[in-house]
Structures are given as C-alpha cells and as structure tokens.
Length: 69
Image 1 (cartoon, one colour):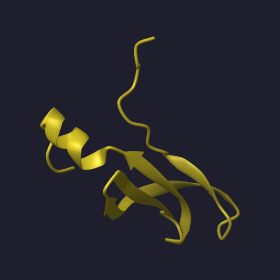
Image 2 (cartoon, rainbow, N blue to C red):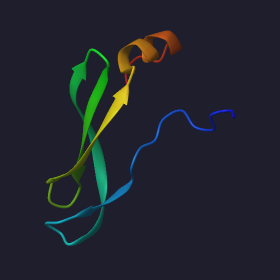
Image 3 (spheres, rainbow, N blue to C red):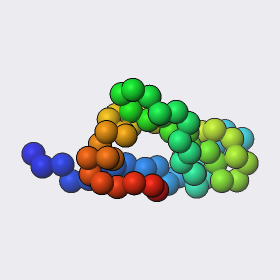
Image 4 (cartoon, rainbow, N blue to C red):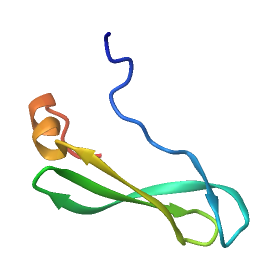
C-alpha cells in the first residue's frame, strides 16, 4: 500500500490546564541519533500537552533536500 502522507502534525490537543481542546505549537526539543523529539505546547497557557518522536529525522530531511522549517 502506498503511503498517503509524509508527516503527521497535531493541530488540537486536550489541555489539562485550560480543560478543553486547544490549538498547539510544535517545538523541536532534541535531535537524536534515530530521529527528532518534538514537544506540543498549548497556545493558550503554553503548557506541554504531548510529545512525538519522528524517526529518521535529519537523514530523511537531507535526503529529501528540505532544509529549514
């Protein structure tokens, strides 16, 4: 089966501080040997609401030629 998307990003996540789903910002925390660790922060109160690890991050980006954001 062909992959239909390149990368998944959350737009809304539940925030315990705001007590409702809120828009989030994705922030790069660490570049790891096997990928990159991202933190999702609530746009309302700036608290951390989740994380994700993207495997093969830097190598994959360089191979695709997409530099920067």
